[in-house]
Amino acid sequence: MTDSRVEVSVAFLQAFADAWNAHDADALMSFMTDDCVFDASAGADVCGERAQGAQAVRAAFVDVWTNFPDANWGDARHFVCGDRGVSQWTFTGTRRDGSRVEVHGCDLFTFRAGRIALKDSYRKNRPPLAA
Image 1 (tube, rainbow, N blue to C red):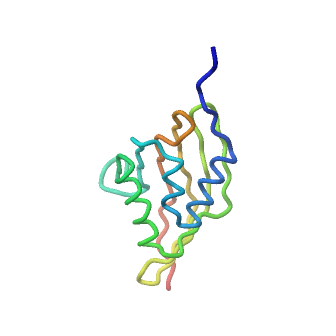
Image 2 (cartoon, rainbow, N blue to C red):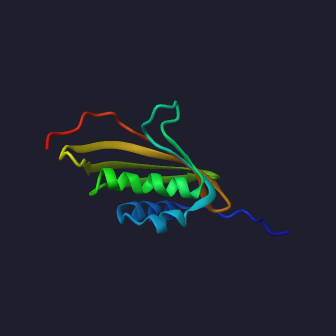
Image 3 (tube, rainbow, N blue to C red):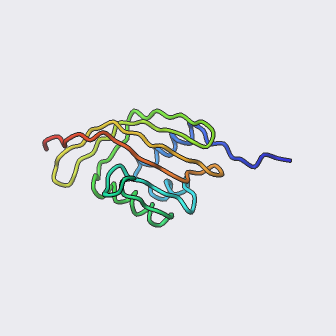
């Protein structure tokens, strides 16, 4: 009998981070399950703003680049343990009003069959920097 689990690696998470920095929604969605969930770092609910399903998650990802056209997740560090993983990063971006954001953050991942089923994002709550 063959083990049907597909292992996710640090290289997988780095490729996912690279797709974020390339602002490539199609590439990002290739890492996600069809029934994926994205919990954003902000929102009215206890989990932040939740997007469920590939179409809603893709739209939420694109919305990040709409709000921060120069968004970048730098200094990425990753680890994977079984069906869970973490990416730590420094987010930088400029809002449409010219104010800048620079904060540390992380994503907590749950994997299923070699893809991301849940991306749960967190970042420090720091006031925007002057334009």
